[in-house]
Each structure stands twice: as C-alpha cells, then as structure tokens.
Length: 386
Ligand SMILES: Cc1ncc(COP(=O)(O)O)c(C=O)c1O
Image 1 (cartoon, rainbow, N blue to C red):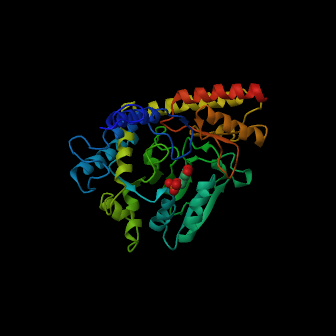
Image 2: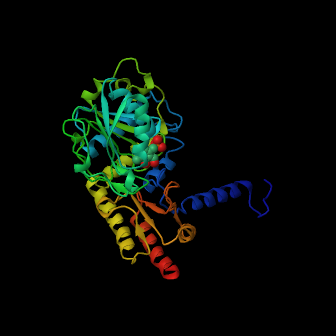
Image 3: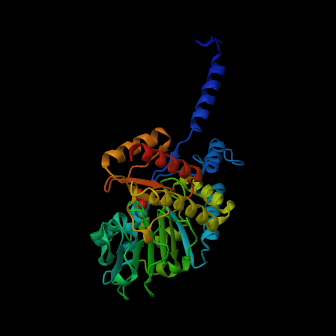
C-alpha cells in the first residue's frame, strides 16, 4: 500500500484521522443555547455507541421500522419513564407528535375550542402571544391576563386574572424562555381545564400533573432533540375532539394509533427515551429540581452581588431557573461579553434577538461546572470593564 506524506499506510492514516475526529468531538463547550440545547453526555455517548447497530437488533435506530417490536419497546420505555417521572395517572394519555410546540398552538384550539365557546389565554411572553395568534385563527380567545405593558418582566398575578368560569380551557406558558420568567405553581382556574405549554421547563422539577388537563412540550430543551413534541392529555378532553379534523391534527386519532398513525420521528423519540432513562437513573425530578435550583441560585447570586454591573431583567419573584436573562451597562459591553465568553468556551449567551441583552439557558443537562465557569468569567469581566 502506498505511503502517505507522513509515511503511514492509508489504513493507519484513516485510524489516526478517526481518532483525531473523536478527540475533537469530545472537546465540548458549555452550551447555554436556548434550544436545541445541551443533552446529557451519557445519552450522546450511548447513541454514538449504538448508532451503527442497536444491541440485539443489528440495525441502526435510523434504519429500523417504526412498526417493529424494537421500536415498540423504545416508545413503551419512553412512555413508562415519563409516566413514572411525572406520576401520570391511568386516565391521562401520552402522545409523541411532530410539528413542534408551535403546532400545538393550533392543535389545542382545533381539538378543544368549540365553535360557540371561548378559551382563556394568560399572556406572559412571546410564546404565549404566539399561542394566542394561532388560537384566534380557530376560535374565540379571551386574554385573561397579560404583562405585555410591563415588557413581560413579571408574570400576571392571580388577582389580576380575568378568568371566564365557562371557558373551554385556560392556557398558560410555564416558562418564558425569552423573558426569563417562570411559574412555580399553576394559575388557579377553578374547574376550567388547564392547558400548559411546558416546552422550556418540563421535567425540570416535580409537578402535580392532575392539575393539568393537557400539557405539551417540544423536546429540544429539557427532553431530547428537535423533532418530537410530547403531549399529555386527560381522557375526558379526548371526548371533546370534533369529528372530521385532519388526521394528523386529531388528538383522538393520534392517541388511538399510539403515535404511529404515520412514521414518527424515530430517532428523536429514541433520544428522548434515553434522556428520560438518564433522568430516572439520576434520581428523578426531585434531584433534578435540586440541581436546577442550585445552578440558578449560583448565577442569580453573582448577578445580584455585582453592584448593578449585571442587572437581572426579570422581577425577583418571577425569575426562571431555566433561562437567566440579564443586561450589562451598555450594548457595546454586552457584545464584548458574548464574544469573550465564547472564546472561553461559554457559548450561546446572546439574548433573544427581540429583546437583546444576555441569556444563560441552563436546562436539565447543563452541568454545574458550566455555571461556575460563567460566574468566574463574569467576575473577571467586571473587574476589567467595570
Ligand atoms: C415556551 C416555548 N413555547 C414554544 C416554543 C416553540 O417551539 P417549537 O420551535 O418547538 O415550535 C418555544 C421555542 O423556543 C418555547 O420556548
């Protein structure tokens, strides 16, 4: 075999190149992105190990049939772990759908908002506004509360809500990914079915699922990769689904067909299954909450101790554990901060384009060490620029 310029055989060169690529791939940065976001390293490693052939199957997860026994087991495992983690009772169904949380903005009213009814929407940020926009295309919407006039720096307070006891449902967004505010309890809506977009804080802490009639979340922040959206829906809501909906948008049909009416996002569901397993093995949502609180407390403490150099944008009582939003004294300094942080492997800290500033997203899989590194960087940056 002809030698390479380095005197190695082609085979040796290929092995060396593969090793170099592998080494590079583990040179990971701290990923503060708001979604798609950081995934647990053990999950990525297991997916990598099994990518060519699932143990006992001999085919890649990317190649297997969604109607095979192996995939049935993956789906069943994902559902069982989700049920275990959230304590989901029998009278709730779980579906793994496509179209992102954004399609749920449409599916919820299509399935649950009757022509002669109205739904309450609590507006606490960009994504609840987006949900309202889509629901209005389907039926009548009542804005039960909004903090838009205050730039969404806080959540609407219970006493401010103008809820309709006859509403078809009441919708809220449990974590406002862009504004960095989060509900740590549910709004009280009486006997009206509560619907929640939990895309950016699902599984970050324990919750009482029986307070919800429907909860949905895109996976790509706390639960897996983009491509699968998990929907948890109480039985009695399925009875309301009108006849004649487009098949893909019909909760009843999707539940009856166990999320395989058509080809589901097999790979995304597989990764979600691994993430759920990881969560269960590390101790479940109590442990996850402890870790998330510790990380958020550390970062907010650094912001609050900076003498005003760093300024949290959310009101203190509403601060999110998932997305910490803050500002610096000037936009020029913010730009410099993002650039210099990235050079130190602190990636994805730029705030959403609609609000500017900084945002550190610290979902379930984000490691404590990454927050410590950010806090150290912040102190150093302030010393040099304050
Ligand atoms: C709270 C919330 N809801 C909905 C969405 C939209 O999700 P998707 O891109 O899955 O449609 C996002 C995206 O960031 C979000 O943060």
